[in-house]
Amino acid sequence: MRDATTVPSNKKWRVLLLLSLAELLAMAVWFSASAVVPALTEAWSLDANGQSWLTMSVQVGFVVGAFGSAILTLADRIPSKWFFTGATFASAIATALIPLIADGLVIALILRFLTGVFLAGVYPVGMKIMTTWTVKDRGLGIGLLVGALAIGSASPHLLNAVGGVTDWQPVLYLAAGLAAIGGFIGLFFIDVGPNVTPSPKFEWQHISKILRDKDVMLANLGYLGHMWELYAMWAWIPAFLLASFAISGVDATMASVVAFMVVAAGGIGSFLAGKLADQFGRTTLTTLSLIISGTCALLIGQLFGGNPILLSIVAVVWGFTIIADSAQFSACVTELADRRFVGTALTLQTSLGFLLTLFSIRLTPTFVDLVGWQWAFAFLAFGPVVGIIAMMTLRRSPASIKLAAGKR
Image 1 (cartoon, one colour):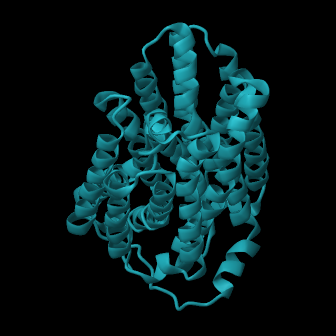
Image 2 (tube, rainbow, N blue to C red; image 1 turned 120 degrees about the horizontal axis):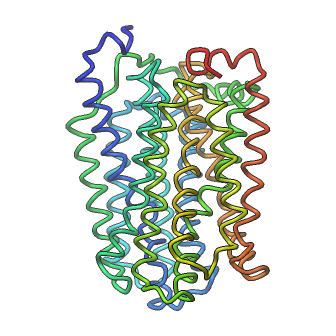
């Protein structure tokens, strides 16, 4: 097996950049319905519960798909190129069917659930492909991929701003079209790198081995703390901005523009954090990121209804740091877990993380009703606290020498 460093650099980075572009385009479908919640609320007379489920149904689908893939070790047994490409096309079709056939919430939720199931073959498998091309620069590589995920997740908000807040069908069609383009990129331009390992036979104990690995589970606990905060913020920051800007007299379209900036800022944060983590250590980077994002969760509500520029700045800083650490939790798993089961370990990590997001996403509107937007996001800071404890514990473990070529 050749090392990734023996592959011509231009070929390696051409594949990785195209993989990241395909991931960016594929992830456009994730928040495609969430971005048009105000329009769907009016069209389908949705209450807060229905609004929440437009996002939560994707999370549930992703969890089901990821758990199924992890239990059956599909990410390590199906050729990654075909798994990634097929799942991307399937998610595009499921999204396009919503404006085509859905006339209410029930059909939309079924299709959103299926979108999540299919995306379980996009994100974790994309990370696995990335690991086959990277070794010493793995943090940067996965950071690039997760950054693409962030920008892709943000794109529906930009489509919404350009297309008009009241026109929801074009947003979903455009998101599906972007995902289909990502599928074609995967089909014709992406393949695994030289560090791919032979596919293992299916055995039930593979999952239990991963769950019993203390160091891998510490990395997973850090990831869970991060995920408690991330998707609740991504799901509800558009509504928060829309409500705050309405008080300040700012046009509703600007809420979509700023929401795009908030989520897309994570793309830059993830890329830069990957480069810094490879140089200074994964636990160092993740801890710093968690401190800043948790602080933003505590403070941003105090700016609600106030100066829209200051509010936007804090929101963008939050968006920059809230996902900067995400790729590094995944990089930790690839460096700590048995190499034969990296795809399964990554899929298990993401499935657990997205399962947890169901609770924080659903709890956010409940807190809005109880304490208002001024304090609704504060409970999300609990996640970063747990994440910091987990990463500081991992830092003291002898196994941490495996992280980032010895940089903890």
